[in-house]
Structure formats: structure tokens, C-alpha cells
Image (tube, rainbow, N blue to C red; front, top):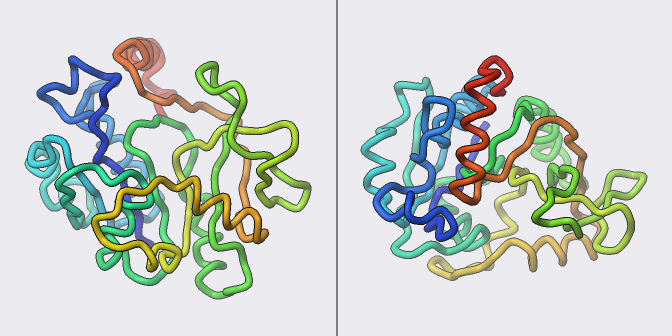
Length: 235
């Protein structure tokens, strides 16, 4: 199974912490944010990783190397400027290959077990009739009370409906969805998701466990404080 960690963002809201340190290398609970993801992915059986970077990317490569320290292999996708999620995936298309893959945002922190997505990846690979994307959703955080998408009774995503939930930052896709995007194009995921939802080709699930979006120094400090109090509940 292959996963892509999205780590190219500048982290403007994290300044001044990210002026000289890339956001994925900011430390929480005694280790860099991106290392938490690598450890979780390895434990769930995702040993082939693609990681993109742009801002201070050389620091990320120097810190992680080829991934062998965590029992994984890392292929690096080097962007001159951050291409957003869909653009970044399209730029790394050859590294990802042709099988359905997991994408994970480097700036979230959750107790979600990525191994739960392994059966879906296998099923998507075997059955082209299954939805082309599957998003993990979470209850809406205070900074995004309106949510992103609703979930239907049959597990599909809907643009309209209530309640709406927030995208958690990790999902699975068929890589062919990105074949039409020229390498180097800057593009967000929302237009692609909207098209898939209209075609009933995007499913979702709700995660109600631990989840944090690490967007500001205050959020980073609060998570670090919680982990110091209850380190056993980190993941």
C-alpha cells in the first residue's frame, strides 16, 4: 500500500515558527509532526511513501532521509512552489503509481487508525464500480463550524444536506483522477471532489475520535501540552 504525505505548505499562520523551520518538522510530543504520521503509516502497513515539499524542503529530506529509520521507503516530490493538494498529487503522479492510494495532510494530528482504510484500498483496486474517492470526515471544529460535506445514508458524500462535517485531512483516491492535470499546475481538491460528488463517485465516513488541525502556534502549544499530560493517548 502506498501513501502520500502532503508537506509542501508554507505554514503562514505558523509564523514566526515556520520562518526557518518547515511546518512538518515542528515538534509536538517530543517528535516532529511528520514523524507521527510516518510511524502511524508504517504500523498500518503503508511502507511506500511519497512526500512532497516546497518551503525549506531540503530540511525535511535531511531529517527523514530515505525513511529506513522507520521501516519505510520515501520517494521525494520536490515542488519549486507549493501546488496545493490536487496540484501536488498531480506533480507526484509518476511516483504514486496506478493503484488507489492514501493521502495525508502533514499538519493534522489524529488517533484514526490508517489500517481501517486498507480494505477499502483493496476493494477499490479490485472493483472499478466503487467510488473514486473516499474521505474521512470529523465533527466540525470551532474554526470551521459550517463543515464541508454531508454524508448520505448509503455512505456517499453530498454537497447539500445536514449535518455537514469537516474533512479530516486524509482520504483515498484513484490516481487516474489527476491524469488531466498538467504537472506544475496549482490546484485545490475541492473542484475535483465537487465533480465526483455530483456523479455519486465520492464516499465518506465519520471519525469521532481525537483530531486536531495544527494551524497556529497556539494550537501546536495546546496539543503539546495535552500530550505531555497524557502521552499514552497520543495515537
